[in-house]
Length: 598
Image (cartoon, rainbow, N blue to C red; front, side, top):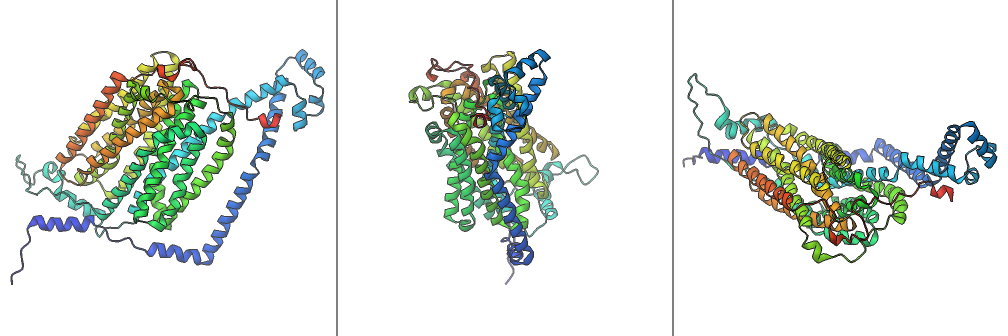
């Protein structure tokens, strides 16, 4: 019999399948790690690790006594500075009033209690100015959201870190060169004539690999969890306190990760991803309640911009997580996440929840919420619809652009992790910059709060829409779309200073609930965008991608136009204006020396 002749199209399809279907992960690394654990060196390292953690726990448990001693010494030093700053006559009068202050200058509780009330208040103010609860809160908010971002991307990193291909990066680049946009339009003619002959190579839609399909299922499960929780979590936070709910959200999403190794790629793994999404979704409205409770109005935009630390978590797990999985195994990443969450929550409980919650300024989140007026509020829906556009753009940039560069332009797969990680670091710092700028603009009185919010919604939506539309028409240089991708991600960082902060402006008493509504609507948009973008993720022809980028640009422009028409930065009447003024400053935070002076 004659051997059946295969067409070039069938041959190329077989080659694509060989390239894109990775071999099962090699378990030699995991076996090597287990062997190392059983060795003498591994046992000694484990002993040192346990000993170091025991010492750290002992120090943390005894921290209140250590802190009291340090604060006492610092307090007395401030008293000395205050006395030396007075003129001689005032010093003599102070000595006559309180001789014991100079007779016993050694730091101690008895000396502090015998000091004058005026000096105590001066020292308290100095300490609070230098070590404020708001600074501590900001640090914990950033680290908490970093952990949330690490958890969100941990499944993708664990899946892809050890996935191998039978073809090298050079061979994959050769395949792209023979089938992609570059070959069709960008290669110079081989002869000296001015006529460019386009090679007749059929367009091939690259099928999804098993890894791609698994990653998509786990990612969508997480999104479904983040869709159902924000609005309900905002009402729970109003009852139990935002400090407690935020801490529980970060702790829960990390603790659940410890069950991932036992349920890897089973239906239970999908359920775990849904639970993790629920916990992460609960942290955003809780953080918004903390913003309006503890942060001054003139600094709210900068504080809200800290939420983009989630993107910083994407970068951390993309770079460090990949190295950790390749060196220590896939399961070790889950254990590190769980341990980090435990440690973070212990510090949060010690320094934030235990000290801030009992003394938190009173807000009206516990009162009956005017649901009808909230759901018919145009500014509230303007915030939510604007978040849809922002989330849609994030889905397109995170899921689509990197594969677009790889499949259409032949961008080396050796740099895929860096390309997916480094722009997120720039996104975080750009968000902080935008937040500081908008606070300065509002404080200086250059424009009104409403104008400032609309300006930054314009920045976060219109330039990215233009950049993403142009991204599909950038020509033959792969550096151009890579630069446009980075710039678009940086511009979207203005969203917290615009739409997110507007949710706190229009109803400070119910900021958590308003932002919970925004996050719910935005998560629905993110989930829809995930399905839409996935339809164009696997083609090597630029026309398919232009449709994806064009739809994303249209969504950005439409949602931004809605905010321009309906958005606001003024307190709405259903916020109970009799109880709070639009520019009311939060109550002054309690002194961190109260426990010493009592």
